[in-house]
Image 1 (cartoon, rainbow, N blue to C red):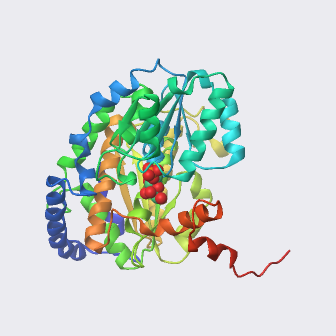
Image 2: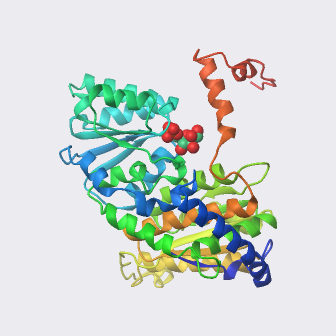
Length: 428
Ligand SMILES: O=P(O)(O)OC[C@H]1O[C@](O)(CO)[C@@H](O)[C@@H]1O
């Protein structure tokens, strides 16, 4: 992973090399804190040792019991689905990967009706084993398998914590299961059993993903000038401090669209604390040049744009044409056009004084993805250290969970009362 901060210097908001020089002393101290947390396997910091502590053999042992499936259905939500989905979207496989990470009845019914359930592995993932959406979807998927005459115990892989409903289910039915690593919040678990089981089922090189994570780990140092991850974390922190309240992450590759969704949880749930944080906006290049770019370039000066691309990609030639107005396209290629648009958008934002950061990976393959995921996780941890927030917790999400559970009769929660007391101003 390579980071270029050039287009974030002297922009609005902007940083200077002097800003970064001054910040580098704090980066060094933050790195010492991070390194100590990694060495002591501390809660949260343990995520940054996963490239060394993850056990690919255990993952293979758990999935090898299944004949190569036609499809894998991940039933999970948040970090329990997005890491696996990021790898599945990015990497090609003849094993189709699907995700049930919402409780939309139309979507769930359509998906379960379409899936070849006799040849699908249902990969149910929940660290807590209590997440309502995941458990509800699993119960529906299990019934769909039964209705299809499929023995669900033959088609289900469980990834969960040491205790809880899913652990109990796996133990009771002798299901193949994988542990969720201790001390790793879901949004930091892509390089663990949570994110890698699907990759293994799809036949991807799990060891290469972890090798990429080790590449990222090796780049962590006491200076932002020596670590792309820390450069990105420090620059985004400094820009947020100066008014860049939104970070629009815009990968120029369809294969990285889910990566932006994964990044959004990582950034929002880790850094949105104590009235601080930086709103991740998910965008896609070149498509959102015809959508959100107008706002990024000419809206309020409160954003930075993170432009992500692989520097190598397969390509498709654009045929020659006798249409004079299109002659410039003929003989070029879709990849050439996409790269030209990446660089044009980058320059367009710079010309409008909008800070933008370039993040490049060699190609969209296992090793580069592992390095990118690790790099963004490390960048997030550094940002959290600089901002002095509790990076690895997410207390703000609990209120709504209690209200929903109370509304369904799952307990006596005052939060549910607030729902009935809603202030109304209806316009029908
Ligand atoms: O893996 P679990 O425990 O089901 O949690 C799923 C997701 O829900 C959250 O806990 C937020 O509610 C996320 O942090 C997590 O990734």
